[in-house]
Length: 224
View 1 (cartoon, rainbow, N blue to C red):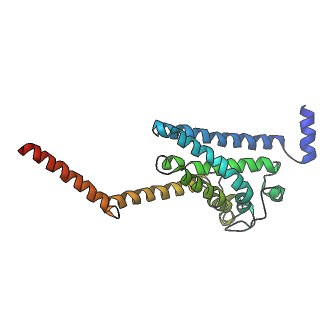
View 2 (cartoon, one colour):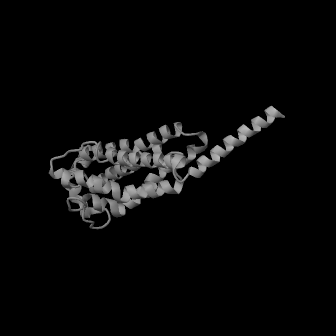
């Protein structure tokens, strides 16, 4: 069996060790999805447990086909800022794979990174967004945001030309998610501020009216 694997690897030019290592790394990153699902479920109310788990699942259901059809081309196409799209993910981009690693093993590795970048933000959006809104966000991340930012580092973009290295996705994946997380947080805070001071001044008015009604009811009880 060992001799057969060795002969196949030599005939195809692929390294069995490198391929197994890439697929093992992909499996470990894939299980981050389950970890995020569990921790986010633990931080939400029981009635929203199914909702947050479905959001994590939709990251792969929506993100994978979009990344294969369009995102991968933007990520590994020629260009310094945005990769030149050359079609869906296939052997056309074989030169992007590391030496000794089959293209489709490399594609799976990049796919799980894309999905994980999208799902990191789901915890901050838990119980704050509708399901369809999250699906739209996930699609945009997988289709445009992550491929473009990751292209700068792993796709031969301008950061790669400056000698920048990202060995474990700490910038291309986590930084992308943190940027989206900060934007979601700022939007949420702005919404709360609007409810308190802005267009929701009507909300403040209603609150004041309720307080006045409660005060009047107490006075009526007192003097009756």
